[in-house]
Length: 107
Length: 121
Image 1 (cartoon, chains in turn blue, yellow):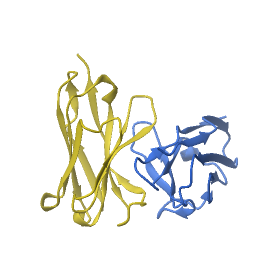
Image 2: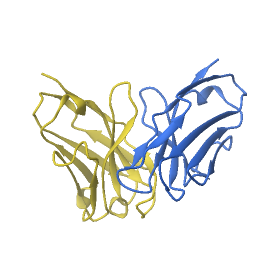
Image 3: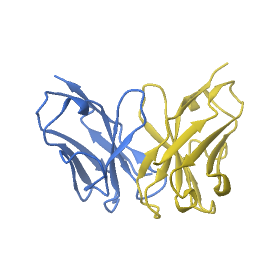
């Protein structure tokens, strides 16, 4: 199985900060890397797919980059509604695997 | 608009069975692969299974292989997860989700609200 290692596991940031979360794949995933946001008690929401494509309706302050094995999710200017947990996921092969999550908290 | 409504969760004893359903609307259900993904209380996301448009191609996580069965009824716009020989470690919120395009590398772009399955004596 492909292992996805996400870092950091948590971070504290202020509104307006630039935030970067990293995900490393244990083998080639050909750019099939997705990022999700999850708020407490809610289903995950797709933010970025195919490493760098912005899902429709997602604010442009979210961006993704990387081509393997390292991928990055960047929030250019953190907003109050962005405090949540973020997960990367590889959709290159089954079983699909997620990173362990990054909780973004208010500083 | 796309809607996925999950039902069938509840409390079940170890070794028991449960069948989850996911009712889809707002899109042509038969055009999309579908997934089940779960999340144990306070833990991260774990992909469980997905099924092709016709149901001919199915994948499972090793943790559920041989115990869980995914299926679909395209005429009724419904996805199912039959869960047998349930264990305490299967306790989780179960989500159904749609793969956002007709290839196996697609992300899960729409998710249902989830249903809690609790396995406990």
